[in-house]
Image (tube, rainbow, N blue to C red; front, top):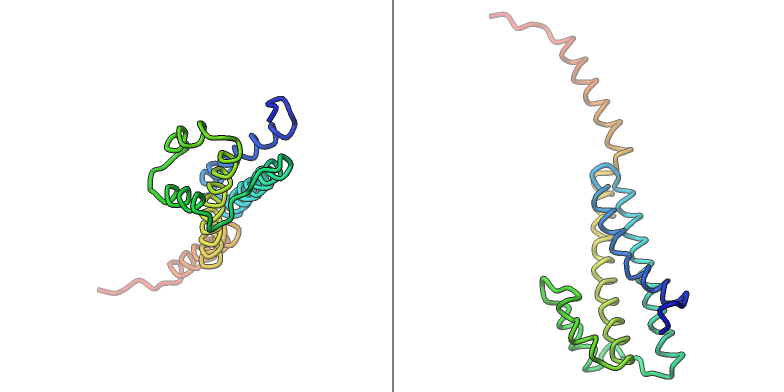
Length: 159
């Protein structure tokens, strides 16, 4: 693909969506809503990237691996290892024909999307259980006021 094309630029930007996850994690202490939103943006960007790789294969008449294809299963098995990064796959990916490279990246995007879906479900459950900052702050203030009022009206204990 021509590196000067708009599609190439869009694919690079979509692939950099992990920056949204990092930013979301940073704001999580003050804005659970922000964390969910930025994680969702990252998830959407990866879905867009997935579509771009599928289009790449289709437009060139190249074969897309099925989910149960032996090659896809090998990539997914590699992706299940802890501590893996692109560097773990660099030689495996970069020395292959374009069809294989695109399919490998499709498999890795599916894996990343699965993990992001798990994270989004956890964030939703956390929000449902604890609420966000907008819900917690008024509760904390009301509890502080009640504690202050209780302290004011408490009779001193006699010895």
